[in-house]
Length: 271
Image (tube, rainbow, N blue to C red; front, side, top):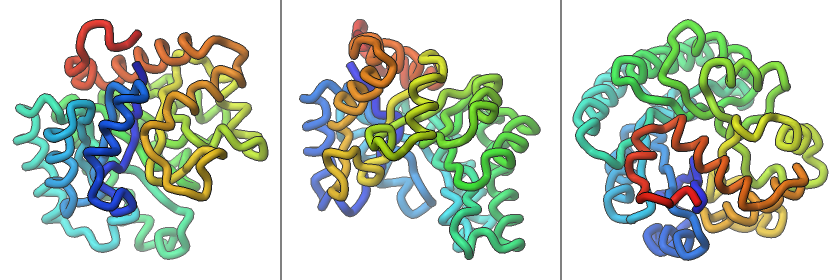
């Protein structure tokens, strides 16, 4: 079975049909979908989907794009919610957190500093509770790595990885896995395809980032978690190996980096 390690199942693009989308993915062989939060306003939504879909679990965090409107009270609320969620087996990670210096308003000095402060505070929460993180990284690979080294969580996933081989090794050395999805299906995405082909398979997990980052055959439509097996097949073709190997290894990798997710899986679900 496959795992989608990053899917915004609560997104409005799914038109209120998120449970049907999850069931459709399950029918396609996706045994688990990890749903990251983006701010305090959707903590309830991701937790409810984690409870409502048999093949879903969730993470809690404040996304860097949401940092401009966030306050210190939101960090307090996050920590309190994480503490309460530790008794919920469907809660598996801190995320989506990180740094985004791509968008102009986020790259301004004051906002860069606020993002860094929020990221570091969320790293502290992850470390306090022994949780992995799901990172958002745009034009900030080295900065994200720097702060992870200074406040190391219990591993994590570099979501939608698109850095250098050296940066990839930096994440792997810190116990992270690297998320690959629909981008690798585009022949023009030369760097992502080189990374997906040449990085050790033991360091890769599958993701969709649905409803975004649709694979070539869906673009520009709405991406869904049922695309994971086909994206995995594209990865297998790039690497010249069998699809079953990609499925089994990437599923095992997700279990390693998110132990609470592994505890949810029925025996034999990684095959």
